[in-house]
Length: 325
Image (cartoon, helix red, strand yellow):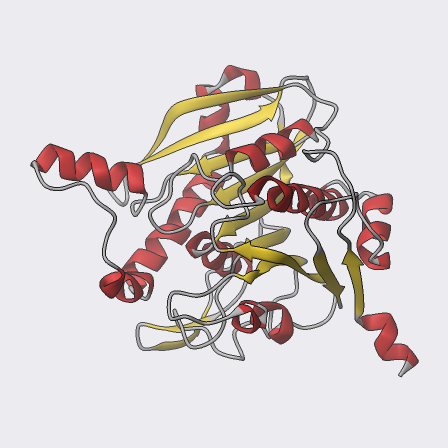
């Protein structure tokens, strides 16, 4: 029993009086936008933007993948927070991005509206769409020299030996795949999209089993650190509840795995501003995720001690449960 307590620890980041916003980092930041990478092999352009410290130095890289129908604008306040703590953060817009889809419909003279939910599951399970998303992340990682050339202020600032990938919803799935989670997809079993350059992953509102080729075996070989963030009101496209969202943590092997469940957070709360208490919820995301990146991309002993102890990171208006194994 004593050994189990050492392996799995649960703490509460409680409801306490707090400042309105998570503390910003010590660094001023810059944002470069309206940028694009060309992938000749796939015949496509990939829009992206970058947030980064406006101070000379070499900084770890975070690539963030948005949810279905989102864009590079998703989680901007969170990524600016990361940048202010010493990270270069690249946001690509995938082909399913809302901005690109609406622009295409406008050009065709068709209606510009949100797609019906009836066909959403099919889109999420489409092997070609899934592979294309992962290829977008690989393109970013393959093109860091080109990205630095396009934004001269980034020259010499990206540490290519320290890379993390995060994402929300479909982007969480994308991050899990590139981190080594396997799927039964397109007639194949245990397919892997692992990119060895990625040191750790942060799936926010991730998928559980029974969707997109995920099974209980999918996380068995996930050896890199992972922090999963979800909320008590975070439901899946099929109506699945928070227990389903917790499966990536539950089915992954012990060792540098973390679970954060934020009270009252729904699917659109985590980036801030879209739901009631959105700012308080996104502050929790900023705080716990920054300590995660610090521990595994900056090799911070104090951040790792915070994660392993389970003690409170900061005061917050949003309560959350924190677990680790």
